Length: 125
Image 1 (cartoon, rainbow, N blue to C red):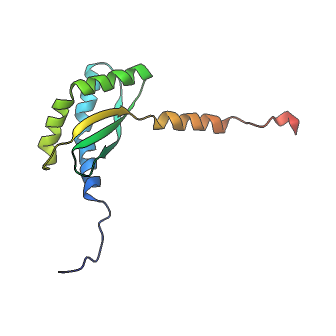
Image 2 (cartoon, rainbow, N blue to C red; image 1 turned 30 degrees about the horizontal axis):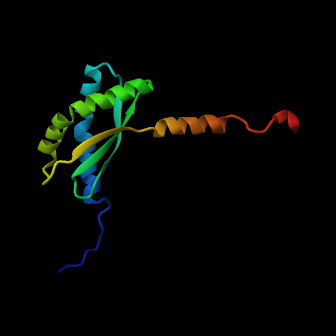
Image 3 (spheres, rainbow, N blue to C red; image 1 turned 30 degrees about the vertical axis):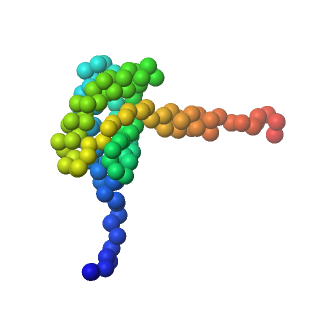
């Protein structure tokens, strides 16, 4: 057996989740536009190592109610999205999809606002 001289930079799971993100982007955007929910983007996809399930994290431009509506619409059409994914992935299993709102951007915005406001009174110097 020939020893490996170079390790792969990304694992198979990383490549599969990147493909899932690419394949799901267009259908998720179409579903959001069809229901008037605004701009939706996939921030990341987390899949189990056996590819039985995956969590799709979404960022929704708009208010929190639009985010809730988008997740509800995607849950209702999850079987169709899994079918699209199954045709493109070419893996033994197609993951069961779960959708969640990614609040990373909101938390980062809150931190920026907190860091931008002075905490020490300048008049006290």
